[in-house]
Image (cartoon, rainbow, N blue to C red; front, side, top):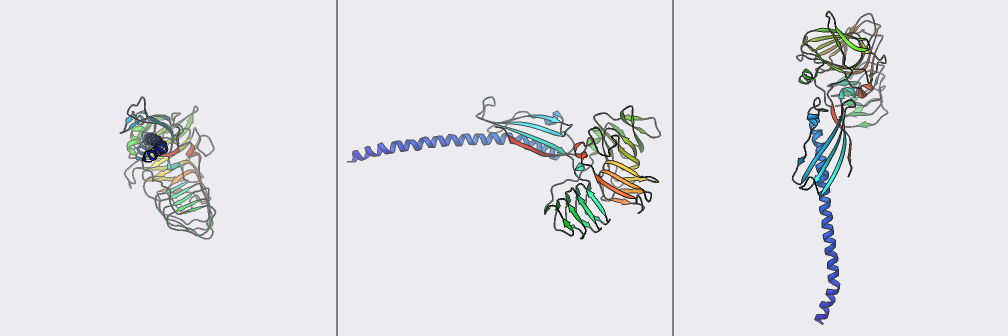
Length: 409
């Protein structure tokens, strides 16, 4: 009986045990393969993370330079990662293909995962019609703001019939209005949002925006033209090319088709005229100094395309350490482009004649003081130009935005 019982157990148990062992071995192989795949995926992902880390630390340099983008094959504890990069400076993008290889033999790995990523470089100087590095109050009435607004502090609206179109409106603090305030856009805030009508969504958080700085070390190495003395520049179109002449001198500078960075170091500039080309003008100086780092626009300063909107050919940025002044008497004044003052929250000033009209088509990165109070009382129109995001001038600080992240196999 004992022998028969053992025989019966063997007949039934051996196949069962064999099946379980086979399944256990198969599962172990699957787990091993899955671990290899996950590790290969992580190795490919490391490449994209490394690029994002690099670009987040420097918003100016190395975005498209072959030397800064080069990556040798890297060995980790269990495998390798390689990468190929396609830089497109014209469209401000970087297309990345990364390869993660699990195994000690790079030529014959146990598992391979491929990753494709697209990084878009975006300047905060082109995203908003108004940027203020601090709290802000809007006391003027019957005003319409078109395009996004960003305030690094509370926004307090006391003027009547203030309307926001197209947004978003972002305030790193409370957002308060009066009964006639209308927001036809999304509103982001820290704290509370109250007063008036909200026709868009309200979000009680603030997307990350970093106040730009003027990196003089970068511009001192990457300029097309440089001066260290106070000058007046008259922009013209001569023989189909964009140029500017230094007033009271014989100096004439041609703007290259690829665009130009014009750098004024520790001095002041006066600008006017018609700009053909994509141009960034940087006027640096000691913070708070009245004698350097200041720009004056004393006549119309517009695009050659005649549309008051940036294009693939024409766009402007004016960046100053301390102050930008718009000043013209006896006539209207129209300016195009980005106007950024690094220091302070009320360092753009407006001076003109009563009854005249001031038009800014682009971006202003400061509150505007009006001196005297009736300057351009015929109208002060601030209109955001979304084309600046499509056709930014060269050399602006840009941060990386991950547009696409896709595992391909």
